[in-house]
Length: 484
Image (tube, rainbow, N blue to C red; front, side, top):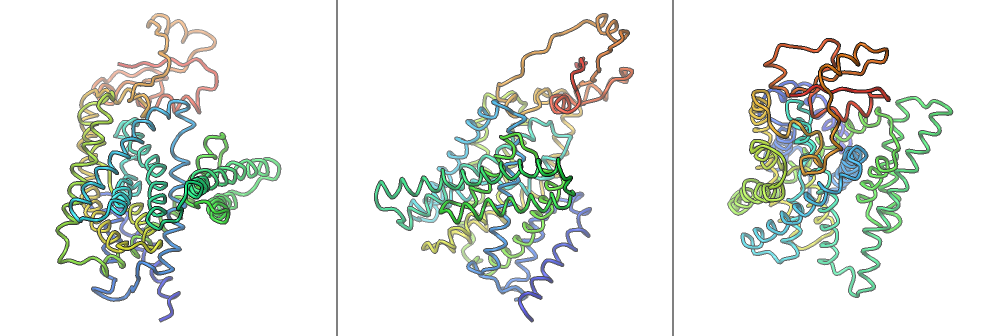
């Protein structure tokens, strides 16, 4: 059978199965990453032998490259830097160093367990420090969870790519001895950390500006704007790579530029980009499952499983508890955030970069990362629904401090200027005037459900949604918020 027919069949299976089981996945402890990793494992050479994919397979490289570039771009666009304004610095300074500590502890664990050299140990620690937005997707969409808590998880998943990816690339260069002098290292770092991101930033910001200008004059149809956004991702990756920089950092910088320069891509691209990335990610999971089925040695699973336990249960939860020690949140929120740091496709993609660089021991690294990812996907995927439901019930039954904040920065101590208070009599007088204010009922979830009284004409909002609503709906009108 020709390879392209097998490829078409694989994509068909992914698309059809995803649609058919989506409802079941939403209601069960199963997750798409677990299902498709398992499918790839089953189709791999150790079992059915339908998919014979190796770590150096060109198809795997193409799918992995497209997936990582798209994921990095979309992560950057969804970082909400524009919404946070200057306040994004605080969560970045807290969560960024937290990632460095996770990398260091992971490297020590790898060196102790496997006895690898420190360079490869730190590469392994870095690949396993990346949290996967795919497994987190349903959690960050769950409105039962206070928005500030969801934003911490989303912000960490986005910012740790900024930390992890350059570290992996620098360590690969160290292992390959790509630069042997201070001048050589200066040139390498300039290309990696300055040239590639600068080109990506220019492509992303300039491209978004150009589409907005053309759309105002000629009204570009939504489907073409969606395709244009995908073209920007590929252009940023290609331009940065051709110039000698790193294409993945270029793609990430392109997404940052769209937000930081106050540009806007059509929401149709975000929808189309999410769908395209979803398809690419699931196909990549199948391919990685097939690869892992051929390189994981079942008789030597003990050490990787010990590492998985340390990474999942000990290292990240301990570090997150430390860096968030002064955050304004309940113990339930701390436990929720500390638990959900799933390893997934990003870790596999980063490990694949090491394999493609032909470093000694790279396939062993990929196999080890694969075991940790399988364990994480199984544990975090199976607990996402019940743990979210538990935390959601806590929010619905009592007032938790994190529910009053709408951003990660606010949880960490950076607040908006406090609003002026008015009396009920003053509100009544204003409501009778010719220009009455908008009244927002922002009582906490538990208080709103427990109290049957409602404000006539009031708009019901969760307290963690006020600033987001105001950014799009206030339009210069006076707003009065009623809370508990």
